[in-house]
Image 1: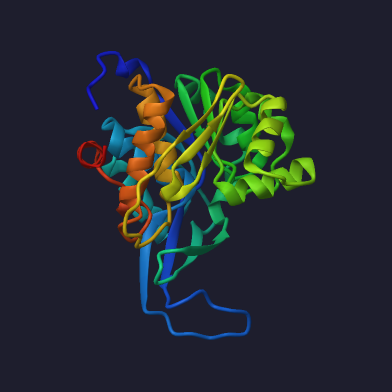
Image 2: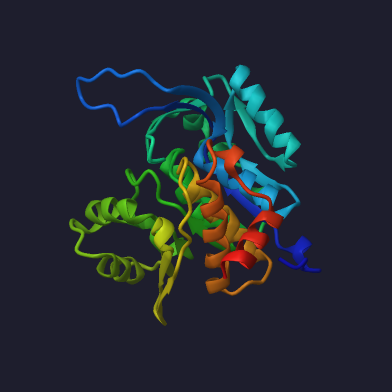
Length: 307
């Protein structure tokens, strides 16, 4: 990706969650009533907001403004040090435990995740530094913090809003007219469609429903199958990349962060999706969330070889 001489004017912000990921690698997903031995136990920095912020910082190369709440505990200190190392600013602290994610990863690289909100629940809208946030041009949002905060950020932000509706629960249609890119995966699209419209018929039908509710673009992430973009002008399928999957944790977050950076750099939406898909494909070949995020040189080399 070529350097954009105007990039300093295009700033990216993230408002969202930070967690410590407690990852259990298992032979298969544990069934109800079953006990199995874990093959491995690992701890990684995670959280959907943090994963996206670190992706922006690593791929974009110039840090990120990230509004999040960490706990006043050892995990909070570990995460804050990681943020500072990546030139990430804007994080806050709360007198609660740092958020946790308990993750099972099967031998096929698939995952199941249980979230404990912890300090993320303290990220209320009154803790937002609006003067600083509104200086930015692109805003990444997710759904692991109080939805009222996410909604207020979407309403007040004057630039491009990218909303990852995960987990797809507790979301109201009030946010939809403020969203430029809604970026669910297929399961999240199903859950959100049932919650808001009462049913899920197909990806295309749901996308059209969200467009009618005011979303500018619906970008459905389909893993190695790529992604499909829906808007009032077109339906565009951008193919993905088949790789050997080790761990899919944070792949969607890496996609979103890389997508925001590509848009900031002036890429077309189609090229930005391709770039984001490459970043996500690289990430699933590695264990962990933020530890799996590639450098920009890796993404560029991957695209050279694959295209």
